Image (cartoon, rainbow, N blue to C red; front, side):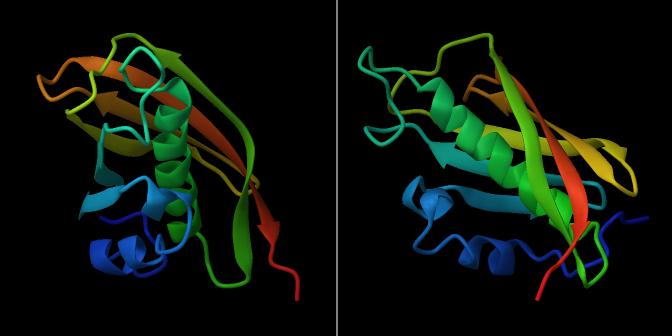
Length: 142
């Protein structure tokens, strides 16, 4: 059974990235399952820190993008999700030239708050980063 209340099609979700940070970072939605979103992001000069490895901030962009999209998909029309807090633990480096994969799943889907966890993995499958995003659920204005 799906947790999504809005259409959750990978191509349509990815199309929304055009002209924004996720699009500039080359984030691609690979799969939308009944309770998860899977994505990929290349690690190149856009994402690297001076030592030639994935910048922690780029990992957070990926995680916040997926968590925000997932949160919004669980909501009925007239409601929206806004970020309250995001954190990330970086546990392994990712060299430039690789592509990371990420999977985002809900830890809590409540009426007024939600918590989403994203695991980001290197090409060899090793966990590189785990991030949590908390969103507030509010009425859409206007």
